[in-house]
Image (cartoon, rainbow, N blue to C red; front, side, top):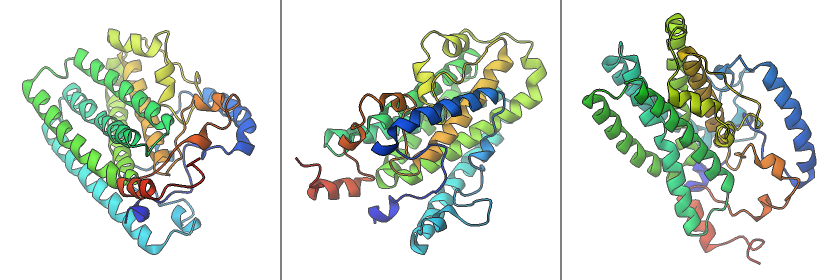
Length: 331
């Protein structure tokens, strides 16, 4: 069952697939070219090109699903659709609750969203650390990127707290208790099907993007008259932006450097952060596809690093591989 749930899904992704030894030296030049393109289009963030918020990643513009192009069985496609349907139902249910409670209290809604949004990265790291303890997993890039994602979301949360989003006891109580349930659910989901867990997180980040995008379009002129929170200025314009670059896996390091002159700039960059999270979560749905943006530059120094990494997906797959290890790696 785990083998079925854990197979690769999508032909397209925001990230290139892990670079083979023969392609290592071409990666740097490709990334440099991509950096120039990204800098030219810095102000234009279109998350819908990465994934439509309500449509399945199986859908493509030519009418065929990407799994069809890689010969995925009808049974597995059915499992994928069930997983995604469950995720969309859960996301829509939470959105309806938030719409009811926070239709005119924006900062409180953002506080709740950011409290929830960083939880899956804690859950991913918890499961991966457990796998590491048993010797089942040695992919450092996943831990680095997920920690950087949680660091980014934590600063979003600090910004909302500075803006007064956590002023009411009820809002804190609701957000924290949803977070506890969400953490437990994500740990179990990630242990069974990482693909499903990443897709669910993609749905959450998609909603966050759409929420901020709508807010800045409606409130933009007022936001431009307001000063930015101090924590936002420190986070986005500080001297050490390594972790800021690390979570943006569709970009090369140093290709995005925000300006923060007012509150509008703050929300614009938070929205753009959510778009980057969306792209990363989509890339993660292809097993083994995630790479740290900084790791490409390191390939020239250590081309054998990826070959030494132990890998498995889902707890059943990990247990199976621990009983029947790959002879090539047991030397």
